[in-house]
Image (tube, rainbow over all chains, first blue to last red; front, side, top):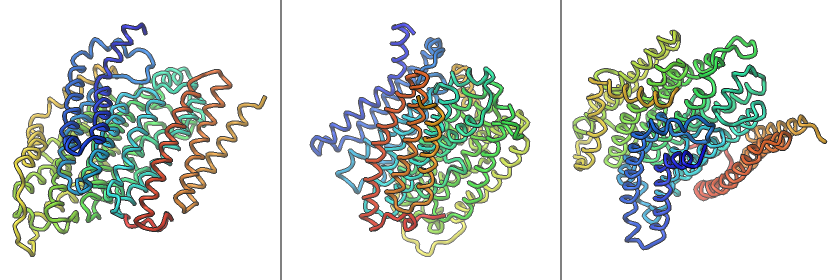
Length: 499
Length: 100
C-alpha cells in the first residue's frame, strides 16, 4: 500500500476518531465544574450524531475505497462493517435517551461523567469489533468492549444484585477470553497467521484439519459465542441482564450483540465459507463445521425459548428471548449462502428496533410501578393504554407474527434455510417460533386480561417518551407491510463487502 | 536448544492448571489468579512460536495481551472489593441471589 492509499484507508476510520475525541472531551468535562458536567449527555449525543453522519458519508464513497480491501489489514471498512457500525451508532444514540430516563443510574449524580466514559469506551470497542479483520484486532476490540461492560453492569455499587451480576459477568468473560486467546495462539501455531484472509488462503492450500486446529476453532467459537450468548456459553446472560440497571441491560442485549455477531460472521465467512472447509468432514468424525453450527443453533434456540417460558422477571425473560434470537442468526449463518447473510443483516436491523422498544417500555413501567415482575403488570392495558399498545407491537414483532417486520425477518431466515436444504433446522426454527408466541403472549395476557386490585392512576408519559416509542414502533408496522427496503439495504452493503 | 514441543507441552500444562483452578476453587481471587495462568499459557505459545520461526506477530500480540491482562486485573479486584462491601464474602458459592 502506498502512502495516498494508506491515508485514504485511514480516512475511512473517521467515525472511530470522532468517538475517541468525544471520549476525551467527556473526560475533561467530568473533571471541570458541576455546571459543565451537567451538559455531558448532550455532548455525548452530539458526538454520536457526528460519528453517525461521518459513517453515512463514508458509505457514499465506499465504491472508491473498495480497492483498499485487498490486503490483510487488521481493520477493514467494507459495506458489512459500515452497516453494522450504522446499527451500533444509531442504537447508541437512542441509548443516551435511555440513560437520561434511567433514574437508577441518575441517582449517582457525581458519577454521571464516569458512566458516559464507560459508555463511550463500549461504543468504541463495538465499532472496532465490527471492522476487525484479524484475530489480534478482534481480541483487543472484544476486551475494549468487555472491560467497561463489567463495570457498567455493576454500576449500582450499593445494590447487591448489581455487584453480583458484575462479578459473574467478569468471571465468565475473563474465562471466555482466556480460552479464546489460547485458541488464537493454537491457530497461530498451526496456521502461522492471525489475519482472517490469510487463514483462508493457508487453509485452502490443503493443510486441512489437524487436531490442534479443531481445538483452536472450538475455543475461538466459544469466545465469540460467549459475547453473543450462544448456548452453551450463555450462562452469564440472564444473571447479568437481571442484575444490571435496565439501560445497561438494553445496551448489552442490543448493541453489544450486534458487534459480536459482526465479528463472528466475519470470522466464519472470511476464514471458512470461501474455501470448501465449511463442508469438509473433520478428521473422519462424520460431521463438518457447518453441522457444528447447525447443532449450536438448534441448542441456542431451543434452550433460550424453552427457559424463557418459566421466567417471571421480565428482564430475565427478555434475556432468554434474546438468546433465542441469536439462535436464529446462527441458523442463518449455518445456511452459508448470500441469502443467509442478507437474512442476518436484516434480522439484526429489525431486532434492534423491537428489542429497544420492549426494553424502553420495561424501563418506563419500572419507574411507574416500581417492579420488573411480569405478574405486577396486571391491568396495565387499561391504566396506560398508549404504552401497552406499543408493547403489544414490540412483543408481536419479537414473536415473529404478521403484520409486523419481525415476521419478515424470520421469513428470510426460513427462506435461506430452505434454499440450503437444512430442513431439520427449519423445523426447529418453526417449533421455536411457536414457543416464542406462547411466552410473549403471556405478557400481553397479564396486561389486558388480568384485573389489578388497585386502581390508582399512574404518572402519564411525557411527549418525548411517546415520540421515541413511536419512532421505534411505527417502522415495525410500516416495514411489516413493505419489507423490501431492508433487504435491498442488506443486499447492497453485502455486495460491496464482496462476500 | 530446547525443542518447540517442550514449550507447547508446558503451555498446555499451564492452561489445564488454569482451567482446573477456575473450576475447582471457590475463592474469587484464586479463580482470578487461575485466569491469569490461562492468559500466560497463551502468551508462552505465542512467544515460543514467534521466536522459533522469526515471525514478529506473536511477540506483538503478547504485549497487547499483557496490557489487557493488567487492565482486567485492576477491574476485577475493584469489582471483588465492591461485592465484598455488600456481601462480606468472596466465596463464589455464596454469591447466589441471581439464579435461574
